Length: 264
Image (cartoon, rainbow, N blue to C red; front, side):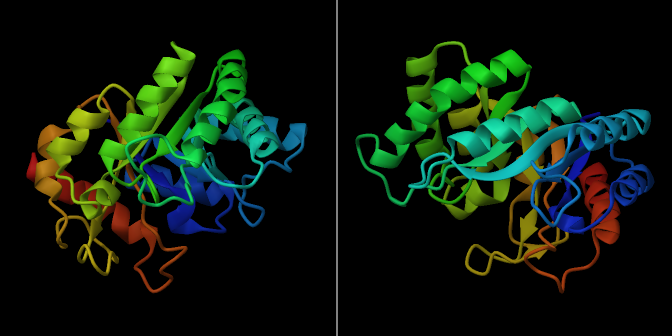
């Protein structure tokens, strides 16, 4: 069975023991740790805190899929130092890697790579070298300017051409590619070579995009389950941080796994 995980975006402000308890009680063995100054994980943690957290996570048998940063690799701001700091944090915590967003100011793109995408290539070259040295990956999430698999695939092909063998992979936020007009089958064919794992979620519609329990909204969850690789981890991104009126993550997790088990 695929690893089951969740993002701490759904339990913002929780302590590490609370995150571990939530994982244990929901049958999850993986977690995406949101990195922010108001969270349990951030780049300001000292070495002792990092070592203690790594030990707690390991003792609980909880695998860290990623440290979820808010670095935007195609953005206009300087992110090189922030990305490097997050890569070191991920390595210290024993995480697989760091989540980054595309964040291109040019939301539409064109036939050629945009200025933001060219900047991303320049940023990823030294970052990928550091990631390889640290034994972690850089995970570009299907999001914002690159919600469509077609556009993200083009950027990743350019990364392949520039860097050859590299540790840059994709987090497939399945609802974002659907919102961009792609079916799960179309997106997976576009991104298959780079996908590390998939974020599962359901939404009320393409327009409102409000999270709902999987299987109760408009997103084609059954189509997603039919095409994903059984080896990929499945992580619930329950966006309660941005939608505080949602049910607690402790309720969303069992509802998610129950629906997925029933759809097999």
